[in-house]
Amino acid sequence: MPERVPEERVLRNWLVREADRGTAEVDPGAVPTDSSAVRDALLAAKPGAAAFVWRERPIRWYRLTIDRDRFVDLRPVGGPDDLLWRAVSTDGTLFGVAERLHEDGVGPLESAGIDVGAIRTYCDDLAAGTQFDPLVVRTRRGATPWFVADGNHRVTAAALHSLETGRYDPLPAYVAVTANPILAPTLARIRGLLQRLAGRTIAHRGNRKP
Image (tube, rainbow, N blue to C red; front, side, top):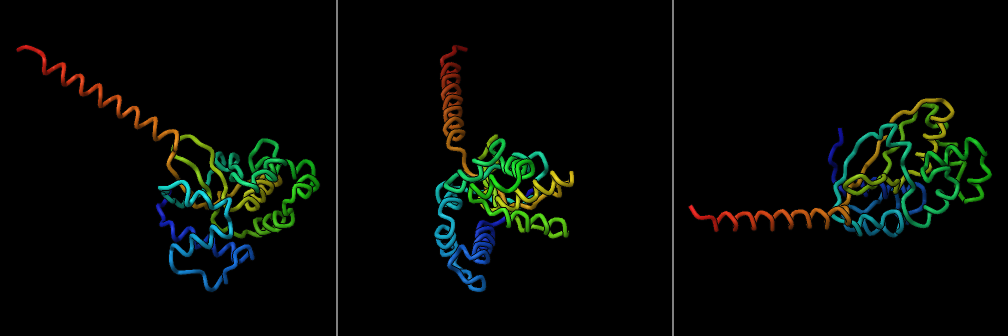
């Protein structure tokens, strides 16, 4: 079952991963303790992938494991990095990137600038029984796709491992659920319509003679 988790916990873990990879100018042993400083440091490290944390509030964060049906439909997050992943995917998903690698070899991914070595290392980790750190995934309320904000290489490695072995071990993830900018106005209009109808009904009843 999904578990509600505080945002600060998710962003701090994400920032530590970026620091460990050398993409954030933060000492992994000295990650800021102030929540605002953590957000600012993460935005500086991942301005595209992490922008939704500031842009699409409010956000509810959950920790869960991703089942296979959801896993095969995970998409790369929007932004500059989105282009290179989608360019080599067979269907716009990260599973499609693994299919391309499985069928056509490393050439298309290397041409797109994707670190195939990192994917292979993660595949070896899976084969050795290593549990991945949680992905960071975002979606909107309602029936919308799930986008990977942090973990494209891990998802592609898990997909490739699944193609090669026929097995999928569910991946852990932090999932951000943001407001739906289309759904919210629609619901507001529906509520307004219901309120107007209720008001007309009450007025109509009040005009009735005993």
